[in-house]
Length: 425
Figure (cartoon, rainbow, N blue to C red):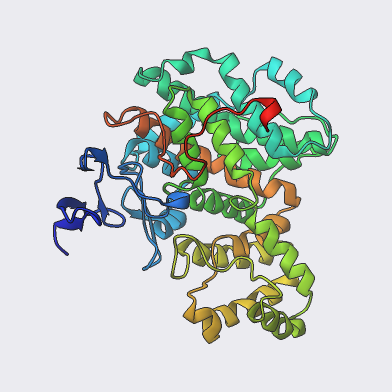
């Protein structure tokens, strides 16, 4: 491919050369070019083909089905790493050494507890409040308790508040869950790791010490790793956009939580479960598939905005499904899911449209097997994504090219006109 792109003004015929950048997708830099003195802009709803930033955090090749964090394939990280190791990688660019990881784990552990007065805030929410709304409001409230987060140009203050947020997010999520169940809060236990501590805060009952099966803890760890970052999606773009006006980490991440709460972003796995329940049994799958082809039904969990191949995260989750169901017992809906997947991978209708299974197709089955109600599914997405949001926030505010977000628009309203007095209308 050429190093420059030739463009021609449709009215004047004047040609311009635009440099091409070799990135996740090859992109042209329009900002330094103008036509007749006006900057060049493109109409691009949803920013499908507009690069808003340079980033060295996450690489996606949707055509090949590749997802890498700082150059490491996500499959390798899910097999060998812990979530906190991956969080360090996202934030610092390299995998930690043994001493660095031990110190990082100790730091995160020391920041697990919530401020006492924040518990008063939690008490004010209705018992039936959605846990994502609690998570969003409480994350924003952290700034009231830690106003030093506004010192984001200070690396030490930034690192401290990043550790606070990553450490407290599972506690906040667990408290939101138990509030909805009218159960007393379970405080963090420093003898547990990141994921098993989260599970004990959620599910501990009267037993003296809660101990989850290590295979279930590992399944949660893998899910957290797979959801830690995903390039410039809706919620990450929201974090960066709010950061562009000079906001602290907590305010920006609360915006990310709000974006993630939308059913088109974080709620797809819940929609997959609804679909599987509506189908019910394997023998009804052919009828459902015909409905999809006729436009009467929608195949949830297939296809992706970025991936035009098998979502690499879905391959890892599919293996985790087997591990979890070995412990919890097989959900009958798994057979329905597996039959749907066969159609997705072999039927010409789906193959020609490149509608491969995505990360949401199996994750809801795992969450349900672990005992989570559907309203918690997006919360389980938000906890690990906090590490990615924090890394993206840090990258943005240290980027000398950052500017306050201000997209162009194409005005389609009335041309200039004069005010008409009331009696003349």
